[in-house]
Image (tube, rainbow, N blue to C red; front, side, top):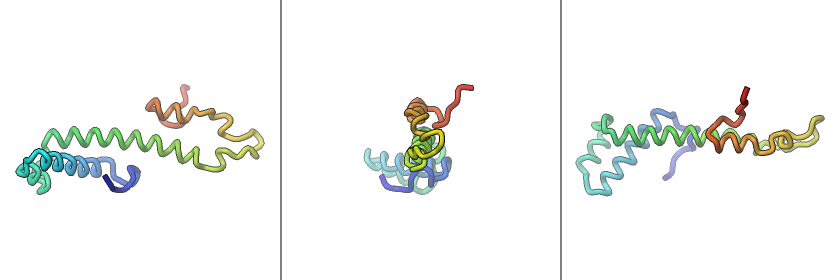
Length: 112
């Protein structure tokens, strides 16, 4: 499925539009053009299938944004630069950002 990266899509509006397209495609696939047409014509915002799909897409968007934050940090050459007086940030990180993100926390999660 093509489209802009998660950070370029409004979370709520983009999720609803994508959810509607997914559910419409599902109805086309199971030979229900009547329901698919209602969705495409904007007459089905109250379909529970669309809300469920939108909620799942929103959760995935949040997860992907956490990954993108950590990847941007890891991709920054300054993160690996050991010329700083205290050494590279990577030396102190030791993979903690990745562990935080994979555990569903923000990249810079502090237990304080």
